[in-house]
Length: 120
Ligand SMILES: *Cc1c(COP(=O)(O)O)cnc(C)c1O
Image (tube, rainbow, N blue to C red):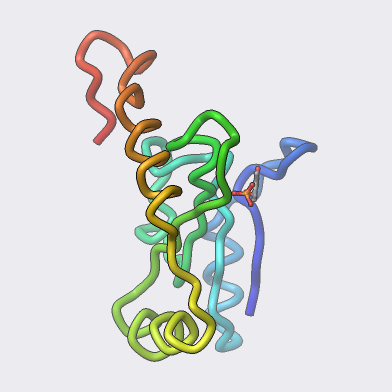
């Protein structure tokens, strides 16, 4: 497994995913990218070849530092073979309060994204 941040926190060093992904896949490793500092609005790490991508929801979705949550994006195969069994056995699910706080944070997510408010 190769794990890296596309833009590191706090040193802001950048890694170009394509070169790391091709080297990792060449030796049979899966690639996990922490893309918190380069959200998918700016970089689609799965399209760049990552097998799994992490996002912290506390920063970009909640925005208030009230909860600990995140997102994992990955291929269908990794979800069914790795993530789902792990979650079923460890109980890694979002509480109802955290889900509500996330929804409250999403109410203002388009503020600051310009007149269209389009973040797709
Ligand atoms: C903040 C941060 C995390 C951790 O996110 P939490 O939701 O607070 O656990 C992970 N990676 C990077 C690059 C971050 O900036």
